Length: 254
Image (cartoon, rainbow, N blue to C red; front, side):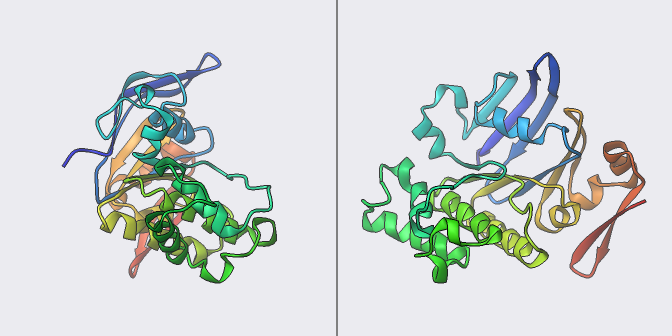
């Protein structure tokens, strides 16, 4: 089965600084890949390169196509990208925000076909927003806003979800809920690429991790194999360890 995303020796220079240096990555259907690393490691830059948003050297392919050669609609049918802290300052309802995910399919929030409405309903249910669907976005909590934006990405029904710190600011229960949603998407044949600072959550949710520092890949592989004490110290400059506790993981630094 062909990969949903491929990066081969991708480099990006921003303001004469190497933001990404020869990084390779593959996301296939059915798997979750997590990007880890300190602030400034290149996680967001990698995602922007993957969507064709920044100039790069090397090869990038979204379902086999160069994203720079695709129209906005063609890209949106391949990948649903959720940036850090997405904004929704206008007073639309949760349901209307989620319905924005159907633009790639030619729909508008006030003109949904039965198929579009079914996609919106499924996304709202998946993100446990049914009781909030008529609430205005400026009236819900930060965690509820985050789930609404995730639902918008799900409603897009793109095979690849690309999420930049989707659990930032969420409490542990909400973060675990997001992880469950992502695992379901992968189980249904989709792929997920997410960035996060939550090492333990990444270890629990992801099939593979890519650890970055200063734009370079330090380690890649299954979390328990890639996130060794040496790799963690190299990335974060602190002695650390990833430990399994039951079905979960804990990351400790000192």
